[in-house]
Length: 171
Image (cartoon, rainbow, N blue to C red; front, side):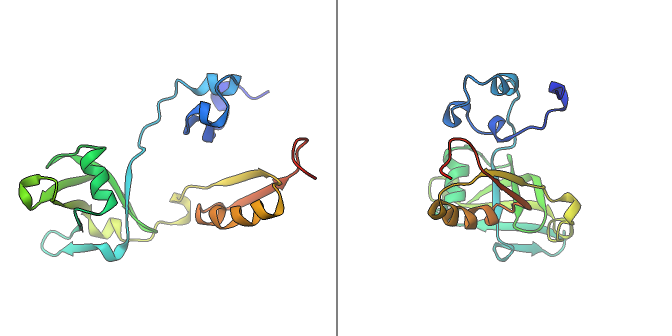
């Protein structure tokens, strides 16, 4: 038996337990007090960013109608000067991207400007050791469901996929 302090954290602690049907499991009860932090990270394409030359800072401008800008405005309710988490796909990430609303006096039609930080750190490709390792154990679903799952699994960056059978799955 593995001591509770060394058990690996699983998705059950990141997703609401009742949604997974894990509300009454002892494993979920053990970890439900673990606070989940760092949920909101804005993902940006490298083409959406530009470098401000004198300071060598990376800046991204998002249109007011962009879903990420709407999320920052309505859900996070970030104001000028506050920080959010952001990252450039397949590159670096920043936990202190500064929010600035541009135009329309910070109102509903304002575009979002994110000051991400040092461009040389954010635009370098992250080495394999810094990337999160994701392994997946999957009970064999029906063939049609399995073929639908494979593209999603690969887009999540799963490095190893184990497929097994279970007592309650069709053989």
